[in-house]
Length: 348
Image (cartoon, rainbow, N blue to C red; front, side):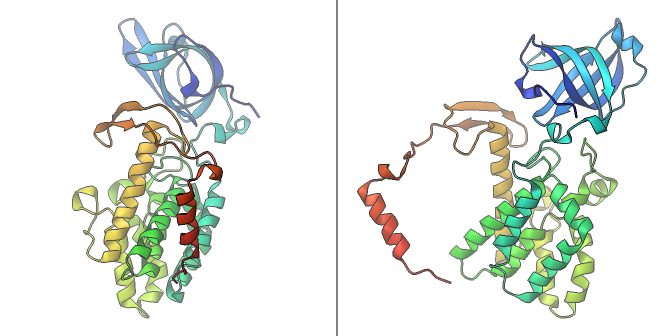
């Protein structure tokens, strides 16, 4: 198994490179001095443009996209971005490659995230109808495998392997917390819908490295695809609880909130509105975290990000409020407050 030495985001201008990269796409174009190749390289850290100039470009009849190559070259500045000038490349077979080095993925294995999702849902969903529905859906190995492998999106938020189940867990956590603030919320159906709301994303994108949209994804979208995949599981339940199943469908159909954001319907129930904002909140905060490239306990000095096209603005990482380094630094009043809170009776 061949190992990478360095990732794209670590490369500096004028650096000499000899390493393995995924060629995501390759296009032969014409310049004034002859043909050249324009490539997009990828590893788990991100992507970078690359060029192959004459005379090497004249020797290459074809460069297969979504293939692996050992590449020797030099990092150059092009405008405000870096690109790699390739001086030599050799194809490699996929069997020689550790794919985890080339595809962005969740920090935790998706199976662990899925187990955490089940441990969150099962104690908090009480009505057998919803438990049986979730059990049936994820007993289907095709659906479960697609759900665990899928990204949460192509490029905006959670755009990495396992991103869908990570996003789903976060939305369920938000819904669980917010439902405790509003007793009139139907928590059972809210958590069920939160778990299933983006199932269609597992079929909206191809399983290839480029993660292009499937024909179904382009023509139907993930909201419709999700309901289509769920319908065989919902049909037997519609005779028993038609009103509950109707509400569940509305929750899924309306979770994007507004028609201009791809929602077939706008949210019209308390649970639908809560689900929409929970989904939007997690998507936005993940987008901010990726754009600012920050860690949970980051103490980085304040800085501005590059312009974020998805949010139509640059983003700012402000000075952080200092945190106590350990419990010994807690004030006496803070300790007293925490102890008194712990002594309060817990509500069911």
